[in-house]
Amino acid sequence: MTNKQVEGWQDSVTNAQQPKRPIKIGVATGIGALLWLGPYLGVNAVLLPAKVQEIVPAQKAQVVALIASAAMIVATLANIIIGGCSDLTRSKWGRRTPWIVLGSIGSLITLAWFDFVQTVPLMVIVWCCYQVCLNAIVAPLLAFLQDLVAPKHRGTISSIYAFGYVIGQYGGQVLGAQFLGTPASVRTGILVMGFLTLLSGPIAAVIVREPASLAMPKRRFTFQMFLQNFIFPLHNARNFYLALFGKMIINTATTAIMGYQLYILSDYIRLNVAGQQKYVSLISMLLMVTAIIMSITAGPVSDKMHSRKIPVFFAAVLVAVGVIFPAFTRAPWSMLVYGLIAGLGMGIFFAVDQALNLEVLPNPQTAAKDLGILNLANTGSQILGPIVAAAIVTAAHGSYFGIFPTCAALALIGGILILFVHEDRQKI
Image (cartoon, rainbow, N blue to C red; front, top):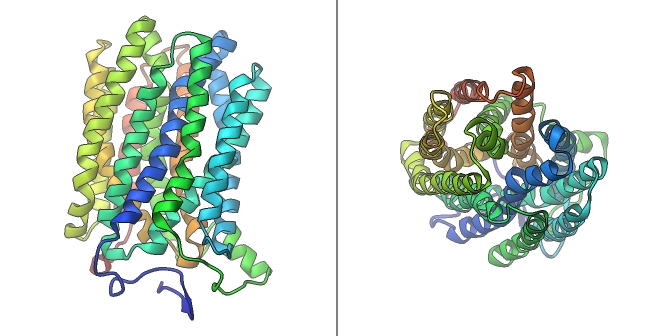
């Protein structure tokens, strides 16, 4: 769909209008992603399981899954509603900036609240509030790539975005692991993550300096407008849903292991607390370094290939190989091999998949809403992963072995779905 333009207002940029790569957009979104995703995963993958283990050690796997289930429902609604509101926002600061700044402030407040709760029901409620605030950052931040980057530059700019995203994806867990040990240190870690998230939206907003959106045409609230801006897309959306479910399944394969990494190291690999802390850091570092290397190169390569889906499928194959490896041996080094191979795959995936997402959007006018829905593949998989893992562990009476072949199969299925996306290579 072509971009919509009226006097003083334009909702996207064409290739002809942007001969040079808008590097600052990549830098802004990369820093923004680093500062929301890193703290989120530092808590979600490391500190939240540690807090749950302290409060209800006998039901830790089930409680993590319960929190994840509730959060998935809230995140789904928040992505759609906040994304749709962002698309319609008219302000002197633009459509996206007010939301990412408010979301950053709210994330600090809710994480600080979560830090002090000591009952399971209250943990679920506060974590859901945090999901609302966090998703006020996520979808509008991603929409900068659609609003301000021409299609021919999206692979390269998505690689810059992916650089920050990858550091957050794995660096957050490295940082979170440094606070393992005592309940007091876990609480300190959660508060630190809240203050880091506070920086996400403001820093991105200052770098981007989003144009005002006051010239955007006003929209009357009609049933048709509601359908367009606040529900899942219904027209020209085949590629959109293939990308959504392919991405979600691949991400679920990795987050099922990452979300239960602490328990895998303690109950499957059988490491003590010191060993767990050491290997969480080593695995996260391997995942991060290999993913960074691939994320830097994969986006520009996909621009030259004029294809997004082939690199994404190759990434899914690497993820499958990496996640199945610990099924063959319980030796601690098997988790390092997982980190190496899966990290290579995820680096390619992070860089190229985001560019693919931008190209399957049904309508540029609803970019934040639709990107928010696509982002459910990220936030949703962070929630689905623990649910899948808990189901496997429960069915196997406490055994973690089945997680590895199941996740390998999921990665391959997700990659196959991406292969069915139709892409116009002449427009890339």
